[in-house]
Amino acid sequence: MMGQLDGTGMKRLHRAWRQRTEGRLALVLDNVANPFNVGSIVRTAAAERVDHLYIGGGTPPSHAKVNKTALGTARYLSWTMFESGVDAVEAARADGYQIIAVELTDTAAPLHEISMEPDVAVVLGHEDRGCTTATLAASDTIGFIPQLGKVGSLNVASAAAIALYEVRRRSWSRT
Image (cartoon, rainbow, N blue to C red):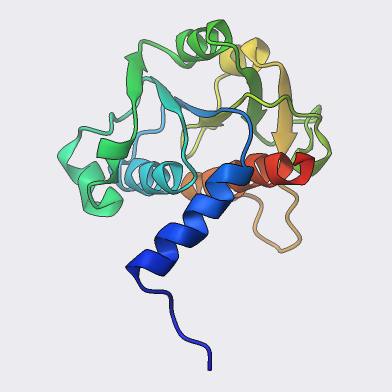
C-alpha cells in the first residue's frame, strides 16, 4: 500500500537528491515588485536549494508580506539587494555564474535547448515589464519557456519554478 512519506522519509528522499546534484544555482530578480510573487519565488528557491538571491530593485525577502507566501523559508536563503538588475547580474557573474535570463524576446531560445554550465544564475524580470533591456544585454543568453495555450506569458513565480527545476534537472542528467 502506498502512503505519504513521514518526516524521516522526506529527509532521506531529499538527501538522496542533494547527493546527486552538482553545481551552484542562483537567482537574479530584476525589479520583481509584488511581495506575494517574491514570497512564492523565495519558497521555491529554498525548495530547490538556490545558493544566493541577487535582487536588483523590487521587493526584498525581508518584506512582511513576502513571508505570508514564503512561510518563513527566506531564512534558508542568502540574498543581496542591488540598485538595479544589471548590478545584480554583474555581481552574479563576478561570483562565477553563467547568466541566463528568462524572457520572451525574438532572440530567445527554448530554455531546454540552452547549453548550461554547472553554475547558473537564472534572471527573471518585473511582473508586467519583464527584464529591462539593460539586464537582458548584460545576460549571457536569453531563454524562454515554451507555452502551448492561448495565454501569452506565465506568472513570474511560475516561470521561476519551471526555470529553477530545469537547471536542477540538467544537473541530475549529468550525473
